[in-house]
Image: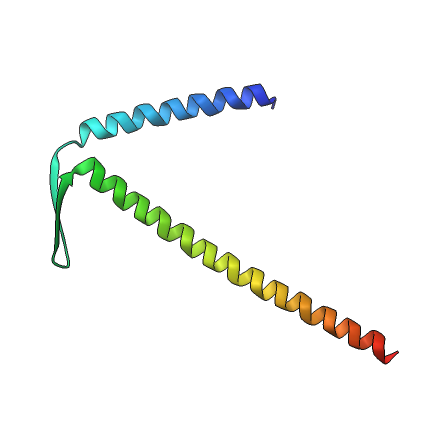
Length: 93
């Protein structure tokens, strides 16, 4: 695909998402009460839902980042061990 065409699809998709978000906000503007472990909050439903969505997204991203970092650490450690073994092999010859 040409870059210009990608840019057009990008803006079309963003426009659709913006319209859906506005419809979501208008339809969920009522006030809700949230009680969680003694913490009592009150606010517009769309705001509560968006905050909960963001917290879920952040949790998922953090979990994936931790797993990625752990794999990279193990990979680097393995490469370092392989290099040390190679150096020992060369020195023994």
